[in-house]
Length: 192
Ligand code: SF4
Image (cartoon, rainbow, N blue to C red; front, side, top):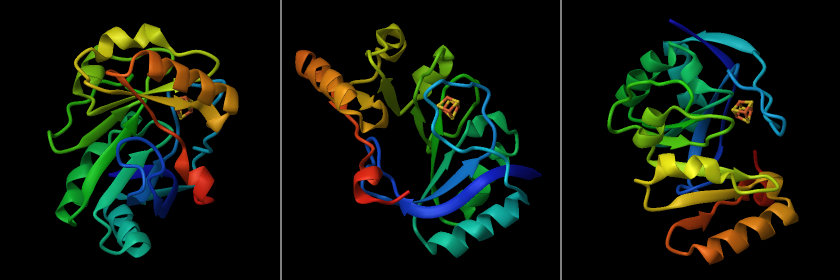
């Protein structure tokens, strides 16, 4: 099985619950959505087998435990489901960052971050370990009912823009039991 890839690189998870943690990023090519604010280059750069991706992860990150499958939309490729156990067999803890539109049965030990955009599959919202709402001029409250089971919902200001940060901070302060701010700290650190 082969994966369509944009890039593989070793860096620090800048966002969300695991912010600050070293991680190897496997950016899958392609996305099933086309968000206006998307700033991710998920164009196809290379095609690799599952074994080749596992080897690249080791070459980039040594024995770094955390591997983040991101995109684009990592669950848009069937081969992603073959990559997960192969990475686990190589000693990795697998995280997936998804837009939550493509229903996929995932093993319990996969950390799933769902960041809803124009829509989200309710089953993926229920499965999510972490919900990350992008604040871009407004808090997308329409998604909140799907994440009622989540004790905490992350509000992430789009692009770290001051106006979005202010909006997210004010919203979190109004609802302190439910929301936390997630910043793109890798941009402050000057890493990818
Ligand atoms: S879902 Fe994410 S990767 Fe896909 S177009 Fe939207 S912002 Fe970009």
